[in-house]
Structure formats: C-alpha cells, structure tokens
Length: 123
Image 1 (cartoon, helix red, strand yellow):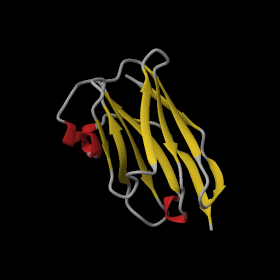
Image 2 (spheres, rainbow, N blue to C red):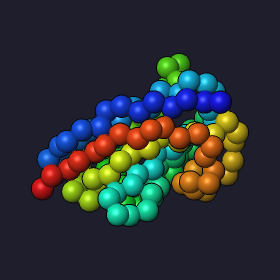
Image 3 (cartoon, rainbow, N blue to C red):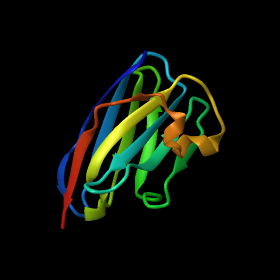
Image 4 (tube, one colour):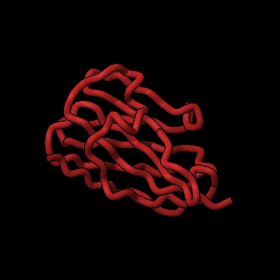
C-alpha cells in the first residue's frame, strides 16, 4: 500500500505559476499527474518513471514540468503560464512496477491515488 499526499494548490491569475508536490509513503516506479475540471472527466497531465522517462499531455507541453526527487520520495509539477482552462483538481498517482512510456499518461496504469489539490486560475 502506498499513500500519496499532494500539496501546493491554490489560486493564481492567468500567466502565473504554481508548483504542486506529492509525497509518496512507499516505493513507486511510475508517477503521474492527472486533473479533473468541473463537469469534465479526469484527464492526463504528465507522467514520469524512475528511469527518467517523461510524457506530457499536449495541452501542457512547454508550460508544465514534471520531476521527482527520489531521495525525498516526492513528485513535483511546476506549472507556468497558467490559463483559466487549467483550473481543476489535480491528482497524484503512482504504481509500483515499470511499464512502457506510453502508459505514463494512462489512468489505468496507476493503482494508488492522492486526495487531490485544487488549482484555480482566474482571468
């Protein structure tokens, strides 16, 4: 069992930045960020594995950066140039085992999920 605890959400104006963090209590190989906006389905944002493999959703490429510090068991999401359409609850997810890079953006890849942190971007 792996517990994930997110933090760092908040409110920001369009064009601003936020950094989300997710502490994992337990070993993880692949970790990812997903988000769910009001009235919409949860969607992929970015994923990273322990080998340095990274994938981004097209909607965030060039604006968001995913990283991890394995010495702290922490996953990060640096979000720059935020837009109102980035408003959502952001979830951290993790799985113990490795897999193809293409799986990093699949929700079904992940077994463990955090409780979510709200990000609100105003225009």
